[in-house]
Length: 207
Image (tube, rainbow, N blue to C red; front, side, top):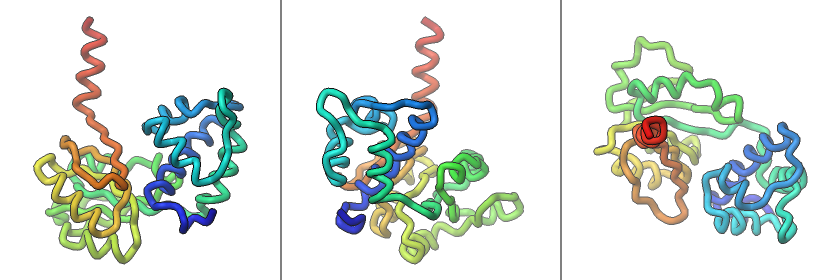
């Protein structure tokens, strides 16, 4: 099956699975079950199995997947020779910290640009990518055909910005905003709630 025959959200998730498999290969893991890989990728096992059905029969019932075989099978379909394009929306303290994080590039992602309602605030701050006005967001996504975004805006603006990004062509969102986004079923959202994670950690260390 050619890449163009696979829905873009599935291509996005297949790419995530392959990064997980790459880490398993590095740790000399030979096989993994769908539940384990789904946990690593933060998706439901049923979703993972449905996504992998696009690349054919790659697992063995009761045994799971051979890590290297699955990695090669996915790479043949969605393997990338260039960085995947990403944008960041909301260049506040958290957004700027994420822009300086070099782990994205190591994993094959290029944060091409950031967007903010007040880009002049950061014009004298050294950042690895340009920061544009929020008004340029839609045109940039459409022109550069960006599919992934990191969202760091205040909660009250999260849904509105998300709607604009989806309309422009974004299909995958890493959400740092403190809001539950309402998106179409085909759009993938990974929520990162830092306060909730700390609250969970606090519960266990104070038991």
